[in-house]
Image (cartoon, rainbow, N blue to C red; front, side, top):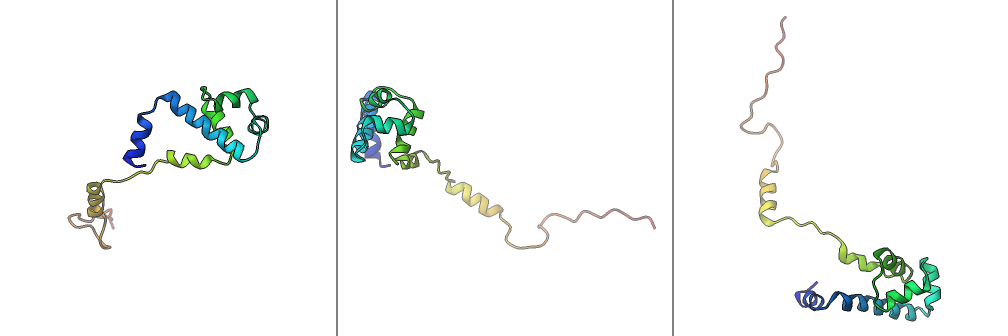
Length: 118
């Protein structure tokens, strides 16, 4: 996400963002030529709950996910993936500690095996 996009959403109020999500759901419902009743039944929610969601009233995350699943829009979850990254300094340190060849490690003496009393 670019800084410009990030700032655009930061400047919006929570209610404006919720209304935008509602408009998104309504747009894609109509694009699929589904009534509120049809989409609500497929999502396992009431029509009034879907109506509230489309109008920007607070809903639950579970309800939102149910609706997005029916609309085949769960790819939105890609934005919530966690991508671990390693700093260049940490990477360099790990590479430095990595063994370069087989054999005994330098600076370490072999431990004597148990002495045998014959």
